Every structure is written in C-alpha cells, then in structure tokens.
Length: 191
Image 1 (tube, rainbow, N blue to C red):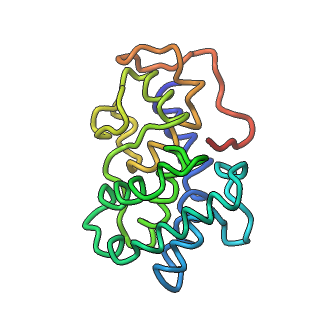
Image 2 (cartoon, rainbow, N blue to C red):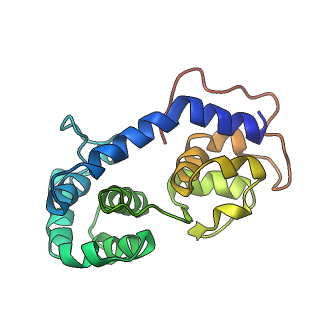
C-alpha cells in the first residue's frame, strides 16, 4: 500500500467513527460529566472503550477523583497540550495507567473543551507506526510526515499510525510505498 492508500483507507473506514466518539464528549452536559466519562473510559452506551477494557475499575475511579479535583485548571487550559500535561501529571503515577490511557482521557476531555491536539502523541502502536517512518519521540509535528498524511488531523494521524503500524513496518522514512504486497485490512480494526 502507498501512504495515499493508507490515508484513504483510514478516512473511509475509521474517520466517521472516531469523530462520532468525540462528538459524544463535545455534547456532555458539563465538564464534570465529561471528566467522569472520560476518566472511567465509558462510551455513550456505558461500555468501556477497548483500549482500557483491562484496566480495573478502581484504577479508573482513582483517575476520575484526581481529575475532578483539577476541573477548574482543565477548564482554564489554553490548549490541548496543557490539558494533556495536566492529565499526565495527575494520573500517570497510578499503577495501571499508561501513556495511551493518559492520551485517550486527555483527548476526550479536550473534545468537550473544544481543544484538539496539534501535535501527534506517540505511544503504544502509534509509536511503532511513527518509528516505521523514521520518527522518534513522544510527540511530533504532523508536518514531518509524508504529504498524504496532511489530509488528516493530528489526532487522526495518531489513530492511523497505530491502526496501520503493521503496514508501515519495514519501510524507509523516504519511501512512498508501504510493503507493496500488503492489502488494506479486510475488516475494521482499532488500535
């Protein structure tokens, strides 16, 4: 697959679902409600998001308590980076919470506050996808990616690199093709 094909597949298969998840947080009745659902990693139907399904409820409950305590600071955060930093400072040391959960919770709270990531946060599968493109670090400017990725927001790039990490592996950072023998996933998969 080429980078263009990967981006097209992401848009076709995942964009609407990802945007729908965030719309649910945008319309939460209050910041406190958004923090609660984000920290407990609950979808609108009450089920747990797949990324956090194995985290014990008591761990997520502790995350919620810590984040509710800084609701005012979250409300005053000037941008997503500040939200992410605050969430990270408050919950990263809770046993069972990792970088992916910190990002997901910050992203959901940010959606409620109308603040989107402008950098790509690399963790878990996203880091693998980024490394396949020769990019290292915990966060990077989306402008360093090959041109086809410019059609995606920073958050969509985070998702895309994770979902397509296996298709991106083994390529050089300057390559315009990705494992030419690979095909797009037959069924949707999430990072």
